[in-house]
Image (cartoon, rainbow over all chains, first blue to last red; front, side):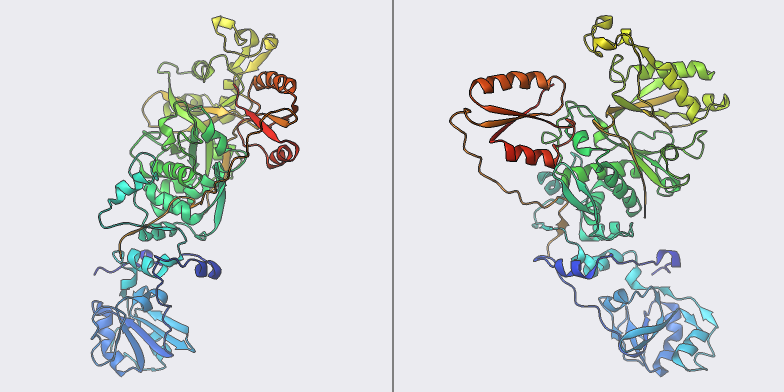
Length: 506
Length: 92
């Protein structure tokens, strides 16, 4: 077995308080035996495969110690080893390295050393000449209880009973993928079956307790726990390191300000658009560059998908049910991307909405699908701003104003035109708003032969296309292409939905 | 043991309740009309109110703050305690 480097050898257990643990017992959930108590005195855990263990083996024969062996039940020769065949001792006592030497008093571990350190072994055993013939130090090997090939199964065996979700038992002939479809759990695409092993691994991605309530999810207004979010994150295809982003997004959409109930129920084609900021967007591999709004990036796609699966499965919000969208849009499967901060000439979206720079944060916006803004000719900021204004004017309807916000996803080549002219975020937005002041005569019902429009009594006033703060600027996209995108919003403000920005916590 | 999956849903058990029996007549009933705040919903409800009053009903009018959110708990309670029937108008 390969040596497991220290950074890969961190084993955490699910954080669950004692009361909830007692309540988790279910008919078809096996309850593992209680954690084994270590005998008093010296205790050593070894495996034959480990060279360092074999090196110290002769010492163990002379040592008055209880020896647990993980692999070969006869190792080390000359001792009476206890075979930790199911790795229960190693798991429950967090053995990450073999050999591990411990001293136990009244059932409590009081000292521990891992690998071979002559000074430490001599001190803990109280034998000042122990192993004098051996090297001063030699690192140990990874414990079998943290073997990547075994750890998921071990976690399920020893911690699976702590998960509270109802178990769905598959018959031998059940096709698990088809079962997930048949039960209505999916968004129309296959999902990853949420086994105990996968859900427990997912929960390693957060420090939050599995049974902690994150939000109340509309439309059924159901408490959603970290565990339920983790189940849906598994189904969406998330990695554990994405989980904090999914949790944060669920929290954000379930606020009264964002109003996911209305976003779901509306006949308009909107869903939660998630824009991510902060250094961890890069750490978890999110895409804010080429094809940022498209396919091909696991983090982008699965975080957004997990959020929608939570709405579907926990909230009970389904198309044809509370979801009354006339058309919907493909982004209602998933719409999540990162801002391209590292090359942005602008302050980030999250910073502009009050987050301290460098914070891992996300913003949820009730939005439709993206639409391209093309201008390959403008090289001065005024010309380009005129283009943006002309395109933004058409959002939802050229004669409808103030009722909808918009995200402008500015591509790097467009952003450079403004940056080269010294326009920062505030200047860009001020210039856009200034170009989007529209006389009421162009907007009233009947103007331009179009019945749609604003009431006649507003004929003599000039109105902005967008309310103050109604244009959200995000820098994202590939390095080539004088293009940007606009993402139209839904009924804004107190009537409908406001963008919500929250910090992402591990 | 066969394979187990974890239930991703809210695991709710839905309670079914019998509908209140339909009254033979609206005469003498106190009927709440809930305007959900959609444009022109009031036009529809004005007509409805007149018809109901003509038929001998007492009509009380209510309004949600916004059509995009469920009626607040207090409003639902108010309607439930003041009315014998309610009509919610989904108008556009």
